[in-house]
Image (cartoon, rainbow, N blue to C red; front, side, top):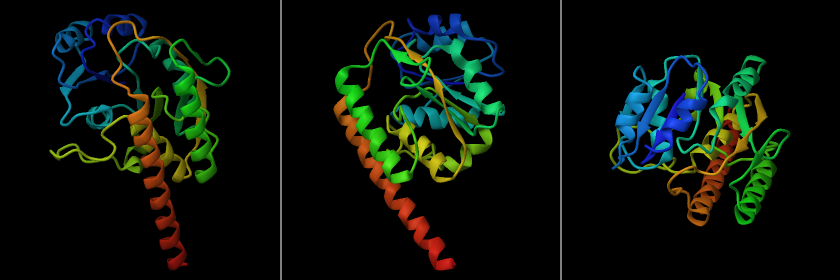
Length: 237
């Protein structure tokens, strides 16, 4: 269980209240100026609590992934928008054969109290583009509630966490990076219905326009890399 957190001291108690029994919790702090660290340690005395090495959700997740010791990695938000009580559904999808259990607000049992019409339209467009390029069938590309086997981590090829300079994949584009790279590798993906709730306290760090643009650029980068890999394979054959 990896929880990136930035100024989420007021929201973490809700997350803890809904949390089912899990083997390990990794809380990754993004430089909070509230009591996020203290609250996390109080709620989960046995948790691994670390600070990320750069800025952005992607870097926070990459740092957290390095600390995971169990077989399954679950990505969940610290603001109360993703329901920890749904974790067993994601684990079930994995144990039934999926390599990635992909949360979706747009399949059966999914929904959202939070998504705006503008974000819904943008998400639809990004889904369409990725599905057309990579022959996938995503319904909710940018939703960050996902679970996968830890053995999949090398496939993701995420930016090294020890580097000081910002890296591509450090931001909200991380979900697209993960989803597309798993799909490109031919691994099994199953979507799991998930209900997104409104953030309980505070304001989201997501910017629909700038982060949407980063996702578009990510799709293009992954498309180019996919073509290059296919070309190299063709030359070897």
